Structures are given as structure tokens and as C-alpha cells.
Length: 292
Image (cartoon, rainbow, N blue to C red):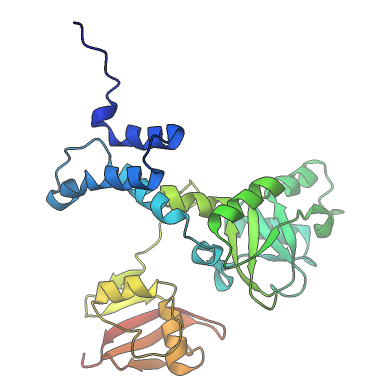
């Protein structure tokens, strides 16, 4: 008897994942993804490739497993890193702001960042310039609405609201209605596929850089869990309060934002020297053993 043609799905975990998603034959999508990843655990330990899932595919599947638990506050651009434009500014200043930011959309605020009016798309601005209305154009007339969401909103729900409202930007607000951060559709997509770089993105330095003289130069926005893992040190248990970043750690130790040039000692035996920052946040620090 002639053998039946095979579609190869028995040896392709990614196909089984997709079939589970489409047809739901007794196995949940989570179980199918976990099963596909388990088949490749040996590959990661040995460095050999025996399965059919590439490293990027495995990364995407792992991100999918965590995606449903992610909140807007987990993926937002923090307030201190938001690039925005004041509504009373001039059109030529707005053009310069877009060129400096390298983004296609900029939040527009009235007086302070806690009063976001909406956002402007660079396409709308260039349309005004192309029609020779640049000098007479009013910033307020170009503003499109954005969503305002709490940091606890699930990313899946946020994506659904973005689709319903046909907007690509959401402002994350705190319990008092102040601006806490910003999320774009690109931020959400990157949670699954990883960092998306385009021709305008400049390569970033490593956020934790070893120094030839010993110690590290660290961006204050680095996740505290990643920082502790890299330095193999528990920094948080000796400090009261919820800590998410290296900058947050320093704030909790001092009870304020330490100024540039200051040194902060940690009980675990590390010294933090503030290399860059302002009155609102620390940006970069040098971290060394206290005995160094």
C-alpha cells in the first residue's frame, strides 16, 4: 500500500504550535509552545542545532508565553525618556524636534508633560509645509488624540484598544493623572519579535560596560534584576521599597535623586558615582567595589 504523503508536521514543532492555535486539538497553545521549546533545550545547552526552530524563533515563542502577563507599565518608555513638544512652540521648532527625535510621532503637551494634549504625526506636519501653510499652521490644529491608560492595563488589552481607536500611541498615567510613561504599537510588537531597528536608529552602547580599571559604567535605566545578575550581587534585599531600575535603587538609598558627582555607598560593598543626571533623575553611574 502506498504511503500517504507527509506534511512534515511530525518533525516541525513550530507547525504543531500553529495547528494548535488554529484547530485546538486537545492541546492548549501554551502547552504546544512549551513543548516546542523543550525539544530544543538540549540544543541551547550543547550549542548544537538539531531541531527546526532557529534562535530568533525560540525567542519569539518565549516572548509569547510571557506576553499575556505583561502590563503597560512593564514596557512603557519612562517619563524621563519621553521626547515631546510644547503646544505653544513654533512650526520650525517642531520640525527641528522631529529631526532630533527621529520618530514619526511626538506627544504634544500644554505647559508641562502632565498635560498631554495628544500627538502629531510628521506626515501631517509635512503636508502643511508642502501646501505652503507652514508659517500659518497652528500646532493645536495638527494634534491627533492619544489613549490615556493606567500602568496596570494588560498589554493585550492595550493593543485591542489601540486597534479599536486606530491610534499608535498611549500615555501611561499614574493614580493622580500625571504622565508616567508612553507606549507605542512598536513597543508592543518588540515585546514579541525583539528590538526593531531602522535606518535612523543609532547603535547604542552596552547599558552595563566593564571598565579597564575595574568596575562598570551603567545606565541608570538598567533593570535591577539584570544588574544584580550581571554583578552577581543582591542589591535590593537591604533596601526598603519597590525597586525596578538602578536609578530607583539609588533613589531609595538616598531618599532623593543624588546629584552628578555624588557618591552613594551600598551595604553590599559597592560604591556608585553619579556620572550624569539632573534634578529629576540619574542617567549614568560608575559602579565599583568599595575597596577598589
